[in-house]
Amino acid sequence: MAAEQGTIEIGGKKLNKVEAVKLAKDGVDVWDDIFRYGTALPAQLDETKAAAFLASGALKLAWPREKLAARGMAWAATFPPAGIRAIGLAEIAAAVALILPPLLGPAEVLAPLAAIGLAGLMLAAAALHIRRREPQALAANAVFLALSAFAAWALFTA
Image (spheres, rainbow, N blue to C red):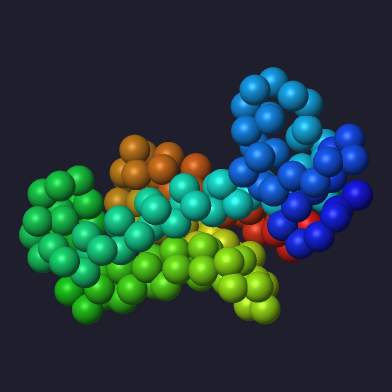
């Protein structure tokens, strides 16, 4: 049973998300309790996604589109600079919304909403990569779409 927000109770002991994940990594079977009472796995996914989207968004803001295109983002060559910067800002805003609200408490509903927003962004990116016939980029979009959808579901149902 959930002891308090952000903790789970396993065998009468209250654990925070990090402790529960560490136990799981050590082979202790806590996954049922994590999925039933806490959000340790979605929280770690959110942190991983946030780091990836923060870095990606920062590059889109800092680098000119020619450099982005030369570094593997071929789609950037056909986008206006303002569009690339808007995507970068959306990625940074979503990354902040994934991490900051759960730490602040009252605004924690923003984290699953940010995950939904990122899933939508990945759907749009996937449509672009399908049109451009870029299967490698499409695979990355599919992974981030699945992670975002799972985290949103887990955070809304926690």
